[in-house]
Length: 236
Image (cartoon, rainbow, N blue to C red; front, top):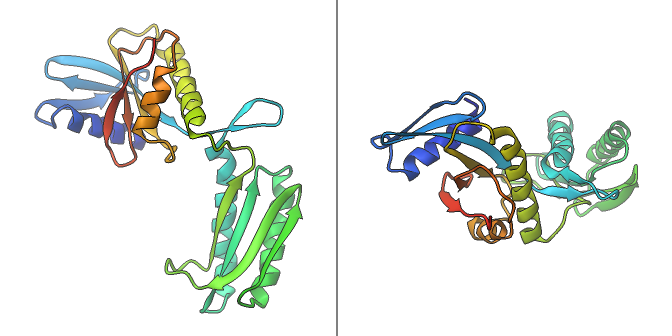
């Protein structure tokens, strides 16, 4: 059982009254887990909800995947160059993704950060175009986190329409998991772990009502990253 499956399973056990009334075990993959509630055994397929991005050609991308490049680059810069900075300053690095050439972008940003780290003047800030994407560096007071190089990742292809993002990702997950689970013995439930923190349970309740295609899931549950569970119902 994957960590996310175990997390979702434990949240469902709590939702249905705790260990005295419910339990989980490994599923046959699919479904991912088997949930026992009283004398009833239910197959539960588990998936995650991550924000889509909208590529210039009209296709959809996965924001987590695209942002991971930037997050990993920032972590690497902190590990490699952070120790060389004076004790009283940090660098704030901003990265715009996705980039056209990851290797060249990483090399150029690393060399730029290294040059700033050699002589960091408080209040310094600069923005550059690198491989068709923006990048910024600012010299700031040291952060309470202890990290010497901190930053942010801005996705150029993301949409600010939270409701649209929620509907698209929920619809995609239901369709894909329905294709996998439709031939399995029933009942089959779907549990979706929310990795898109801008959308809350109310947002997904509204989004689900707009989904009108048929699917095999008798019940669909939304699980927050804190383990809160709520049932959502589609319009179908």
